[in-house]
Length: 113
Image 1 (cartoon, rainbow, N blue to C red):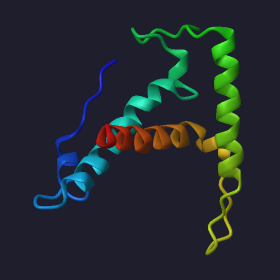
Image 2: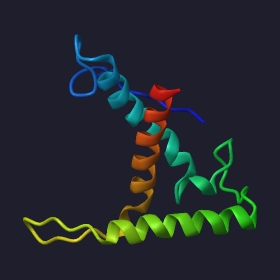
Image 3: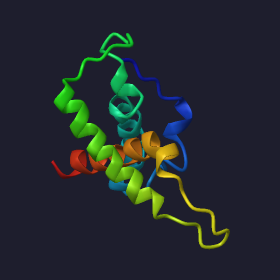
Image 4: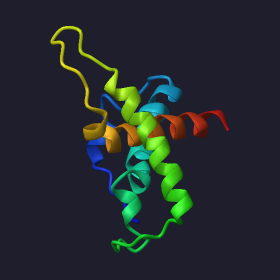
């Protein structure tokens, strides 16, 4: 897997000179963790370590993943923008929701370890 980060990520709002380190680390770490988490979301899980489209998870792992993904879908189906009354569609956003949550969790874990 290869990941590239544009130089702009090391500027505001993700990084600001003089800001508390934990905020800078959390912001940048969340973005990095988000991108890494895409390797294990609803699309990324279908590709092996060489980028080939291949079923490499066991059936049991795939079933467990789909159960967890459904939890994300159900959770995000409950979100509504109160100003516009637009509701989220958890099926449409599940890959991004998994990556967002993975990014935050991984950045927090790095900071607390």
